[in-house]
Length: 53
Figure 1 (cartoon, rainbow, N blue to C red):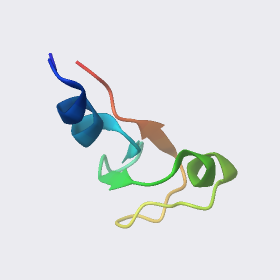
Figure 2 (figure 1 turned 120 degrees about the vertical axis):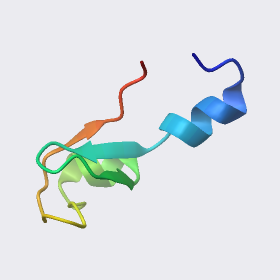
Figure 3 (figure 1 turned 45 degrees about the horizontal axis):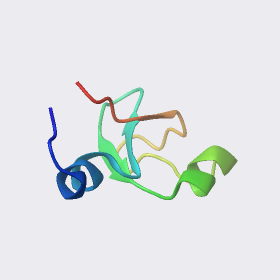
Figure 4 (figure 1 turned 90 degrees about the vertical axis):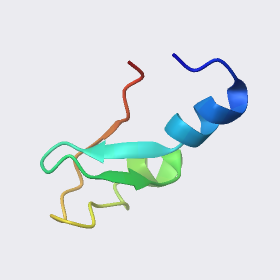
């Protein structure tokens, strides 16, 4: 899909999707793993990495 590194970083690096409301949020990996980051819309801490189609 993505053919150059800059575009791949912009689209996928540090982006997480809420498992409940599907909103996207950019955050550091370590804070997400520690549970310090939550969804802006619903407040859930259940986040997953954005999928590369």
